[in-house]
Length: 240
Image (tube, rainbow, N blue to C red; front, side, top):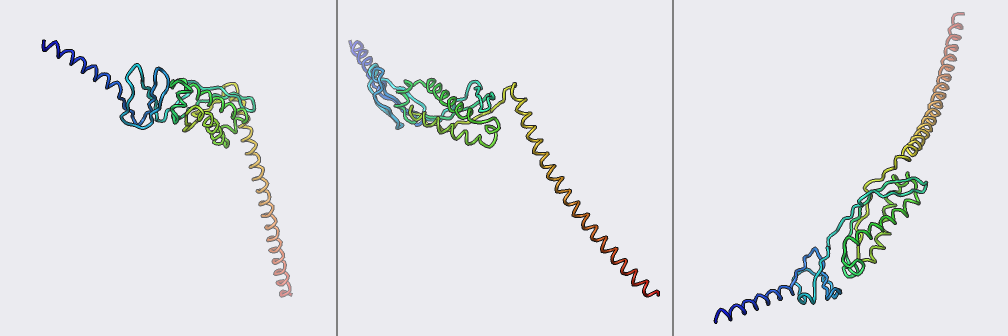
């Protein structure tokens, strides 16, 4: 009879422990926690530590990363420059969730959806900047300004979905095979033009120096001849 009483008590105790444990959760300092009631978001926990909720099925918890995340473009994207040239571009984005409530409303907590959206924003910003510039500008003096513009545009749009953009970078810019030869020919022609100008300037300077030297030589020879004639005249006068 005693055992018949103990087993139900033990079972009830274990059930109580299970229910109690389901009402407790721990938020890591690297995470946010979102508490849902029947699928609806009821609160967001941003402070790390021990937290409480109602047991399932009344409430559930979903965690989101607080740390900086990275998105690498899976394949190089194709863009057209102001001169109608094609470029293949690899980029990456560093981002993090800063407003978990807004993030959840935007993507229902699906991180993959967020990554797809960020890829779209970056692609749009890259396209807007690349279509305004030439290949030379994109790979030389204006590249940093281009990246600043892209980061600013993406950051402004990402803020509306609860995301902070930490950085946007280009890993590489490649000319497509059909245009690389013509571009390099143009760059080579430009280098030759500059070299010819430098040589022309150097030749002109050299000619000026040579003319000055010849003039100085003529002056010296003229003076020497004059002095020699003077000395010769004085010698002839003494001889007579």
